[in-house]
Amino acid sequence: MRLIDLSQPLFDQAPNCPVHPPVSFRRTVDHPEHGWRLEEITMATHTGSHVDAPLHKIAGGKSISDLPLEMFVGPARIADLRGLPPDTPITAALMAPKLKGVTKRDIVLLATGYGDKRAKSDDWLNHSPYVDADGARWLVERGVRGVGIDHFSIGGMGPVNAETHTLLLGAGIWVVEELKFPPEIFALPQPLKFWALPMNWPGCSGAFCRPVVEVG
Figure (cartoon, helix red, strand yellow):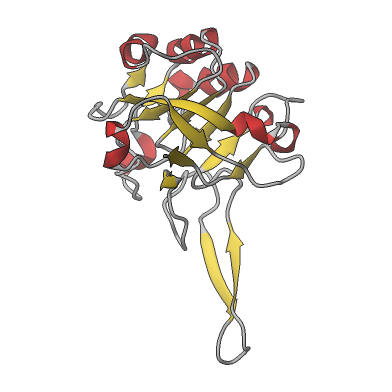
């Protein structure tokens, strides 16, 4: 078995959602003075590669610890949407031709190319392609179990798409954000076996994860 890593690295001052606290990694003890090394990390739970649980947008919704781990492992289909212009809404019409084989309970992964643009730039922070309400309803109607995207927000940063998270999470569809798709992944036969196991954080609205695709 081989695993292909779809995660984004986290490090001190890593790019993240601009309305969240900055990412901080601080070495508090180190060799040789203390005889051991320890880091102190500060960041929001929805930072880097992470999973959103319904509680993120739905009052009284399930937290990350309410969802069984089995939900985060399963067949995934990648929609190759690389090359979309900034601020493009990902609609049902855009997804349908790319996801012809999608079945109920599949995991849908959206590759916009913005995982490769990750930086503290205006383009990456504020102008990524995003799933709009029409696209979210299309995914809900197909009964997918989870949706992923290679940006920190599946709904982008504009007010026009405020419904996206609510529609998906309200339907019990978890969301994994901040993926990165290596080029080799697009040549693999689909569906792929995808894993995105979240941290065991009772009561939290989301958690870090290490998204991977299993090959062989």
